[in-house]
Length: 102
Image 1 (tube, rainbow, N blue to C red):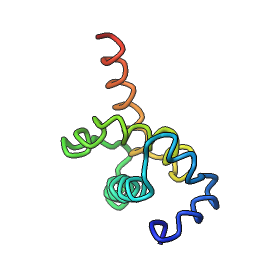
Image 2: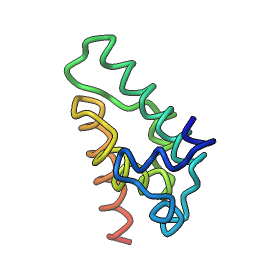
Image 3: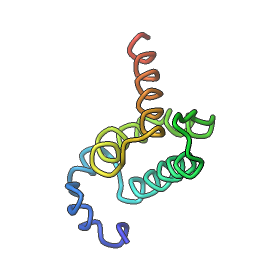
């Protein structure tokens, strides 16, 4: 639905113009949210208190665009706190620390 009516993102405080400035399409945002929500659901359903990211998730988070979507949109405006979110935050901090050290 968001792909056919991107204006709905404004209900979450996201404008199509803001996405455009970050070089993110509505389709990329929606796809990334599906992927991240699937990861979160896995840990929530299992009732795990701590999440350990799979290589698949880490590879996904290695994308700068995915990290931008997480930090600027998903984490702040569209995602609940929990073990998965903490694991994503920690992994992104690790990646970006390594990148800044190069």
